[in-house]
Length: 227
Image 1 (spheres, rainbow, N blue to C red):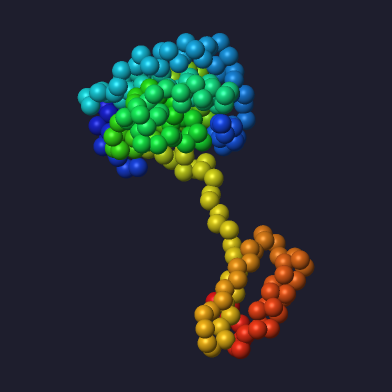
Image 2 (cartoon, rainbow, N blue to C red):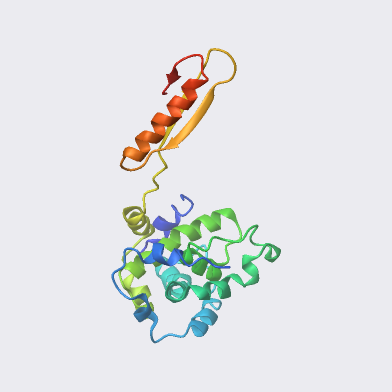
C-alpha cells in the first residue's frame, strides 16, 4: 500500500486531571481494560522508547508497525489508569529544561501524549503531525482493536479516516448565551449589564431581567436599549 506519500502530504494541515478519561471513552461501550488485560504497563512503557523515529521515507505500514503500534498500548494504559499519566509526564522530554518543549502538555489528550512520548517531536510541524497521527490511536481504540493486531487492523485506514472519525465524535463547543442591556442617558458613558440566558427561561430569569431594567432605568435619563 503506497499510502505514505498521500498521508504525509497532509500531515501539516492540522496534580493530574482524571476527567480526560470520560472525554476519550465517552463514545465507547466496552471495557477499555480488557484490551490490555494481558499486558504490562512497565513493559509497554519500556518498549515505547525503543521505537525509532519515523523516517522521511518510511512507508505507511512502517509507521503503523513502529511508532503508532508502540504508542497504542501505552495510550490504552493511560485510559484505563489515569494515574499512569504522571509517569509519562515525569520524562524529561515533557519539561522545559528538556529543550524540546516550552510548556507542559495538556493532560486531556492521552493519545497525543502517548505518541509524543514515543516519537519526541521537536519542531512545530512535527508536533502538528503528531496530533494528526494521534487520531488514529483513538480510532483504533473505538474499533476495539487489540494492541497486537494494531498494524494489520489499521493498514486500511489513513489520516483522513482519523480526522473524519474525530469530527464525527467531537463534542460541540457551545458558547454561553448572554443578554446584554445597554443604558444610555444621553451624557456620560454607557452602562452595560450582562445576564446569562438559561437553556429554558423561567420565572426566575424573567424576574431578574425585569428587576435589572427597573434598576437601570431608575437613574438613566433615557430609555434602555437592547442591542
